[in-house]
Amino acid sequence: MRRLEGRVAIVTGAANGIGRAIAERLAEEGAAVLVADVAESGADVAKTIERAGGRAAFAPTDVTRDDHIRRMVDGALARFGRLDVLVNNAGIGTYVPFDELSLEVWDRIHAVNLRAVYRCSQVALPALVSRRGVILNVASQSGLVGQPMNEAYCASKGGVVLLTRSLARELGPRGVRVNCVCPGGVETKMLQGFLDVVGATPAQVAQQVPLRRMAAPAEIAAVAAFLVSDDASYVTGAALPVDGGATA
Image (cartoon, rainbow, N blue to C red; front, side, top):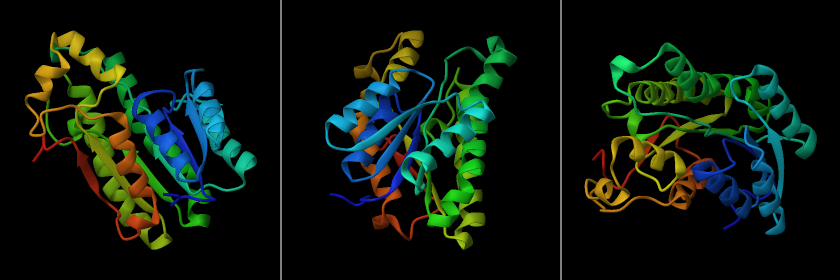
């Protein structure tokens, strides 16, 4: 499918995992993609997209810094001439007992997972309004249900869900749709880091999911591509679980 032919997308946190899968899927569907990440390996993602016949560029970006966010948006406009889609995917987290959760870790997780969604969306908004564009936020199953030793991450992702819904109501009259996906267990380095802390395996976690398996990043990307395409033209304010039924 080429549902995004001629459009331009920014994907934050696109150097690996879900973000990389989304960037590659949007490019496959015809979008020019600005791969934004603090990791220099984002440049390899952009090169991979270009080798496959797509259009992409890498923007080194720390989404907690306003100057980086502005440079990211300006760079997309300068390189590709427009902006139709913003995917706020960058995220971090850690498992730690609540009485050991430091203020520094709490603030850092919220800066990346929630504040950056607000600021990236705000900075990109004029360009998105001009194109009647789309904002897609990557929240989490952890933003819909509580999890022990994961309070900072759950709170930040729950904030993303309500920010999504609030923005959808406010920006709808201006032609901008805003949705979020809420992935469950996905086979990424980030999830493996969580599992290492609690001493669990992917197979053990999968047994708690109705579909009895973890998701591949590409499965989250497929839903993301739908939500930013015209196939979802009447969908806004949605927080769509992509979790194998874990929150059913």
